[in-house]
Length: 253
Image 1 (cartoon, one colour):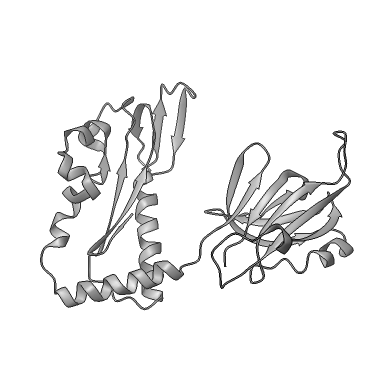
Image 2: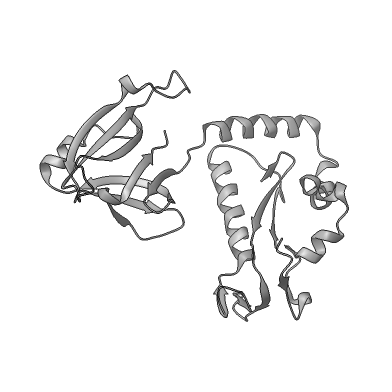
């Protein structure tokens, strides 16, 4: 979540039960209806890391940010959240009880936290940053998205196809510079497991933001054992997905 005179990275954690903090900063949640006890990485450290990554990206794109431009908050909106020692939580954490005590105008756009950021500073500098951020975020890359069976989605980066040489050769036209979306369809009938799958892919059209018509889609048939190598978001491990488990894939430009 961004504001042009200060950028606030907001992490929302829907935790319920009694939460405590370990010495290493990790959080332990007990009494959750799904888990008796579960440990989570430090949400504040995660939000801080995301803020630093965003700051580094903007500086790499040539934005000269004022000192202290970024801040971060962790919001715990679940009314079933509780803690024994709430004072142990860092000031960046906003619990449900603290949230309910905020006035409506403070809740609106987190103004209670960034009010000071809107005071002072040269108007010309603020407008310059505003314009730069508008341009950068409108041209920033987004994640590729895999839709797999079970109504699940995986965000990350598509790397390549793996399988028999004739199949990978047939799939060579599917590159992010040329294709925006692909859909996997079965080729067999009567509920039998297909040995081959039909891959429909849509050529990317940079001139139009509208959806392509069915006549523009192209198709290729490959073995169902063909795999997709995919780098999930926030993971160092590359995952392999069988084409038979994938419903569709959206490729960022």
